[in-house]
Image 1: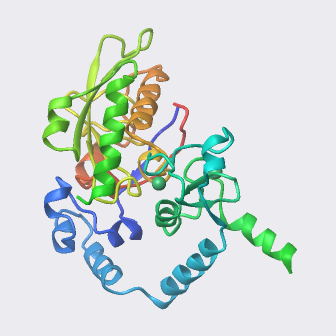
Image 2 (image 1 turned 135 degrees about the horizontal axis):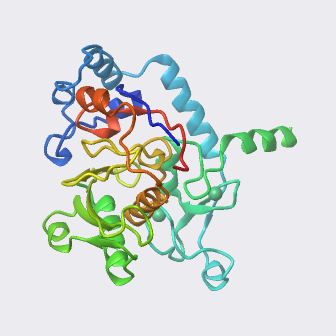
Length: 147
Length: 151
Ligand SMILES: [Zn+2]
Ligand SMILES: [Zn+2]
C-alpha cells in the first residue's frame, strides 16, 4: 500500500519557467503574482533571484549541456528514410510527420526527433523523451573511445 | 499561446476524437472554446472498486507544452484513492518529475485510469488533511515524493 507523502515546496525549474497559480494563460509570466498564495515566504526571494539572473554555476551547467547536445548527430530526413519502414515517420514531440529535408537529431538510443523539438527538451533534461534513456552517460563513453 | 503547443494539442484532440480510448471522454465543446483547458471524463473500469462511477479531470496547458507538463487535477467529485487528495491533486510521477514530451493527454488519462483500477481499498492519502490545508492551488508546485507507483 503506497502512501503518498507530499511536502509543499517549489522546485527551481518551476520558478524559472514562470509558472503560476490558477488559470495559467491569463497571468503567465508574472512572477509577482505567483507567490502570493504560498505559505512559505522564502519562495518569493528565491524565485525572483532565479528569475532575474542565472548564477555562474547555472551558466556553466547550461554551457556544458549545449556542448553535449551539439555532439549528437544530425542528419537530413531523406527520401530513403521516408520509404524505409525502419525509420519512424513521425516526431514524438510535435507529433508531426517527418518531411524530406527536415533536420533530424539522433539520440544514442537511436530515437530520433526534429532538431528544434528535441533540443528544446534536452536543455531541460538530458534524457530521451520516448525511452527515458540518459543522453549524457553514453556520450561520455563514446568520447573516451574516440580519444 | 504560441503555435507549436496549440498545433500539438489539436493533433492530440483529433487523434482522441477519431480513435477514442475506452472509458475516456473529451468534453469537445469546452476544448473548442479554449484549446488550453480540457475537461476529460474518466469512467471507473468494470470489475474495479470504481465501477459505475465517473470522474472529471481538468487539464491546463501552457505555451511551453509539451515541454512543460500539463496541470492535471480532479474536479467535482474526487475519487477516494490513496494517491488522490481530497482537493483533486494527484500524486503521479508522470505529472511532474517523470513527464516527457512524448507523453500526451491520452497517456496521462490511461495512467490515471489504471491507477484507479489497481486500487483495492477506497481511502485518502494518510497526509490528506495536512496537505490540503497547506498546499498551493497548483499541484505542480508540490514537491512530490513518489513512494509507490504500483498502488
Ligand atoms: Zn518534431
Ligand atoms: Zn530513446
